[in-house]
Image (cartoon, rainbow, N blue to C red; front, top):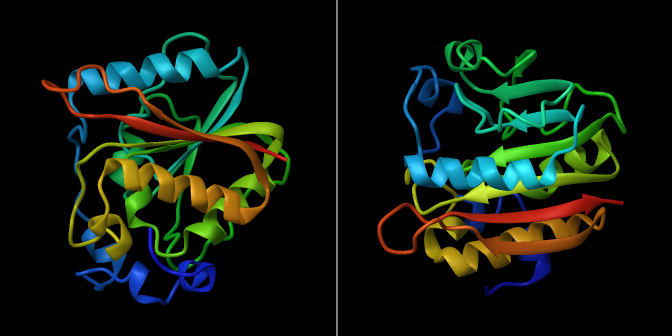
Amino acid sequence: MKGSDSEFEASGSELFKRLDESPDEKFYSTPRLVHHIDDEARLALSEFYKSLLITDSIVLDLMSSWTSHLPVTPKPAKVVGHGMNKEELAANPILDNYFIQNLNKTAKLPLKSNTYDVCLLSVSVQYLTDPLSVFSEVSRILKPEGSIVISFSNRMFPTKAVAIWRALNSAGHGKLLVKYLENTTTFRAVTFTDISPNKYHTDPLFVVTGKAI
């Protein structure tokens, strides 16, 4: 990945430009009740979550939709969803409550500090124009040693994905997300893992995880 840290951190730099800079509220106003990764990839993600969650976890599903990919067990004590479309979030049966917020306008989360055990961010990280601010907020609301789990595939809405994401391959995306978390200085044990169920016949799937300090 090219570019200095100062260039990387600048939310207004060319790295975070999008082909479509129209209001995100307009783009997400129409509900999309479809899956953004295929059946096998969704199952692989659910199994990965199962290996990470503990019983009675308090979970934030950031940039969520009508499905959260969470396993049946262990059952979280509470799941709070965030997204941009009310109809999608209302259709998600796992959410105990939800809030709507454009993170590209306001990164500050309306949530208490040191409250959540896990933050999930499923196949949507490519749309953040100020990821460092968002991940700093995630570290604030997580309990010490709480986990962030960022998953991604090779699918996206290209007009809304930031330039640096569009320019990289999957390995580059993994390195980029590791850098995102490390540059917040509030995560440790940051790892990048390929959990693709089948490298030739299904959607690829990758996760980057970290522990809040």
